[in-house]
Figure 1 (tube, rainbow, N blue to C red):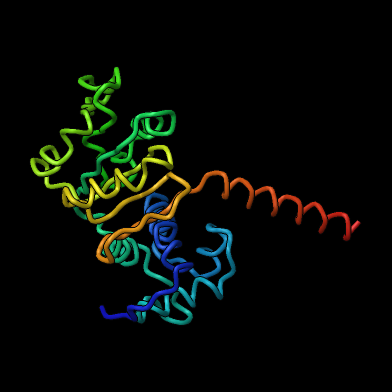
Figure 2 (figure 1 turned 45 degrees about the vertical axis):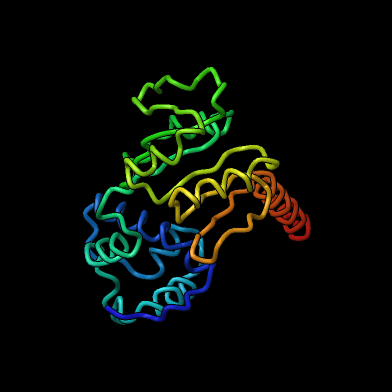
Length: 219
C-alpha cells in the first residue's frame, strides 16, 4: 500500500489512537466501522478521520466503512508493532521510576529493558520488580551495544539533558523521547519527541477555562 510521505504532525500524533481504537473494535468483535464511529471513539469529527486516512490511500469504501481487522493490521505495520522494540531509560528520578513500573509490553510491543543513572546513585546495581536492571551511566555505551537498542527515554534534569543525549547518540541511539523541557541539538538522523507535562497541564487548564466561558454564554 502506498501513501503520501508528507503526513502532517497532527495526523501522525493520532496514528497510535487509531491503532488503539481498531484493536478495541477487534476485541469487541466489530467487523466494520464508519468514520463516525471512529471519530466518536477518539473525540474528533468524522471529516478529520477521513482526511487523516486519505494520506494512506484507499483504506475504506464509501457506504462500506472500514474493515477493522485490515486497519488494525495496517496500523500495526505502520507503527512497527509487529516486532518487539527494546527501549532504555536514562534518569531514575520520580518520573523515571514511574515509567519503570509502566507495563509497556502489556499494551504494545515495546519493552523497557534497562535503565541508567549517575554511577553514585544508590539504585545502580539493583533491579526493579519486573527485573529491569539499573546501571551506572558510565556503562551505557557497552550495554547499548550488547542489546542493540536504538530507542531511549530521557528523564534527566534540563541542565544534563544535552550532555546525556549526546552520549546516547554516540552510543547508537536514533530515537529519543525527552521529558526534559529543553530543545536538544542533535544530528538530523536522530528523531526526538518531547513530553512537556507542565505545558500539557497548562493547555488542559486553558481548554477548561474556555469550556466554562462557553457554558456561561449559553446560559
